[in-house]
Length: 133
Image (cartoon, rainbow, N blue to C red; front, side):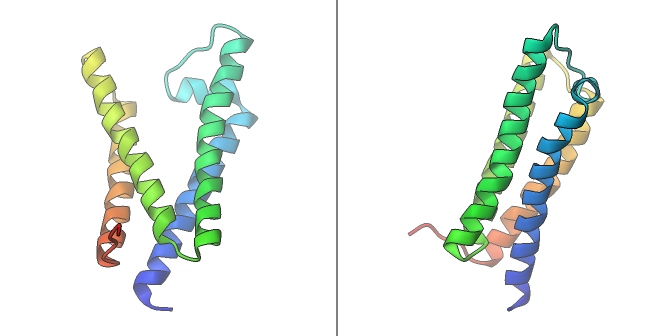
């Protein structure tokens, strides 16, 4: 296995693991996660909605990435999926900050990591000369 291919698999597996851990970790302490990202749920329905949206999204992305990798036999489609989704997180984090008028330190930290993750995905895909035919 060549180095680019190894890096592609490492990237997609690490990102899938990140999505899975991030999603499932909410289940251990919902109020702490809400507080960490500066959100409040006014009742149990709000907490359930947060679990549904956050845990469902994050674990769904992690599982989809792993299944794409398994069934396609390559890391490329998983990397493309992850890169597009994180790219959309960046776009709408910026849109949201424009709508509210500022970018908080919490959002700035998320953006910094997301830019690194997307850059890694784009570089790996470009080095693989990925093209949609």
